[in-house]
Amino acid sequence: MIVSILLLIAGVGVLLALRGPGGHPPGPAAGSPPPSVLLIGIDTFRADHLGPPGPGEPSRTPHLDELARDGIRFEQCLSTAPWTLPSFASIFTGLRPYRHGAVGGERDYLSERHTTLAEHLARAGYATAGYVGINYLTAQFGMDQGYVSPPPRGTDLTGLDQAGGVTRLSGEFFAEHRGAPSFVFTHYYDPHAPYAPPAPWHRKYYLGNECRPGEPLTARILAAGGVRGENANRGMYDWLAGVTDPRFPPAQYAAEVNYADDHVGRLIARLKELGLYEQMLIVVVADHGEHLGEHGFFYTHYLPYQETIHVPLLVKLPGNAGAGRVVAAPVSTLDLLPTVLEITGIAVPDTLDGRSLAGLLLGNAKAPPRDLLAEQGSDPDDFCKTLVAWPWKLMLWREGGVERTALFDLATDPGETRDAAAEHPEEAARLTARLRATYDPSSPLGRGAPGRRANVGKSDIRLLESLGYVHKPPASAGGEG
Ligand SMILES: [Zn+2]
Image 1: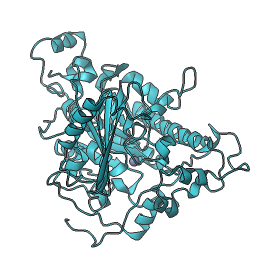
Image 2: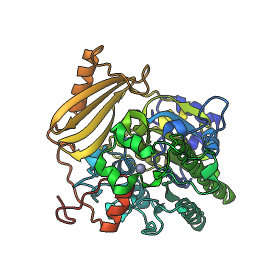
Image 3: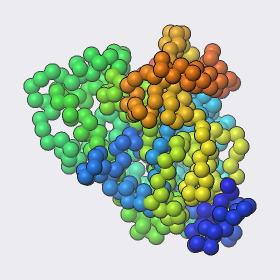
Image 4: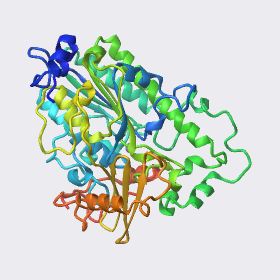
């Protein structure tokens, strides 16, 4: 149904109009300026770390909870990939990884032929900026497209106070451009390993002695077999040197989430001070979650199991329309670009893989059943793809050219511990066929997605490796491949 979100803000009369046939064209009311937009991307933020960890326990995300009370929370949002580059490229383009082509390996540069969210908004007259905490989101990887104010680069990308800079610069940008429609992408990298929350967060959820006598945690992690030796040897677990207590890393992860939440709170307080908050469109999303020991993986995000692809999604509409609504229907991070375009009155391209969530945000549309896809890998002989058709989830691995699949029932087995394919062979066959139909089996990238290699220096490669990414030097630097 076609809806007008800004008209909804005007009151109940409009609500009635929205329910009638025809409705209004989407976007701002005639004569109204389009709303300023804040997109907050919190890296490595598992959906189960939004709100209290259990009944009666204090929330780890009080500021995001407050934002959720002013907006709409999506309970089942899935990302398109379990790592930063392809996932944010999907958020920015509304395209699945095999269509936007920034999937890693020899194809780790987002092609300029795509129109990003920031580009759409800049073309519509928005002042645009992005402030980020990892170089995968910079010009090096083609990920700065559309920012009129380029993000700061090369300084303190993974430092302890990275969040402080991002919060301050984001607030300053909105202050400088007050009175004109503005867009800022604010990226908090903190929950990504190494988990090193600053004081006093470093002792907020853990008060023991993490280095008490015992078996080194890294030995247990490597024995679990989920992490390849090559990754571990490149320093991705150096931050766990001497640690023996397995309760320490998850507590520090939670502290990093709480720290990022604190910065969201500071930024929102600044927007309220500036008098901008009420009429703004604010979206909070994560690019992926994290393995915290599930499926043999520790403190990384590798395979598209639910712990890495189920992410938080909050949308606060202008005028706080729909405040407090919770949407259970499965949605995708692909849906953010068309949603923001519809709310800001910009034409939504018909070539996108995502769908506008405007109807769900206002509670006047039902979500038709859909297949949600996620994928990992850039090597035609080594990748994992998954298709979720709630409650079923089909995973397909190709390793060394050999394929295998597993079927999970997310309703009864949310931890994906039991392959249900033998009990439900028809379901497994049906979903496998649907998954295969989405890509060219000879390539994990699909048909015709041109790839390009980012030009990444040795120091950047070392940085990425220390963060758990395998980043092989290019055979020949740069250029279309
Ligand atoms: Zn990430």
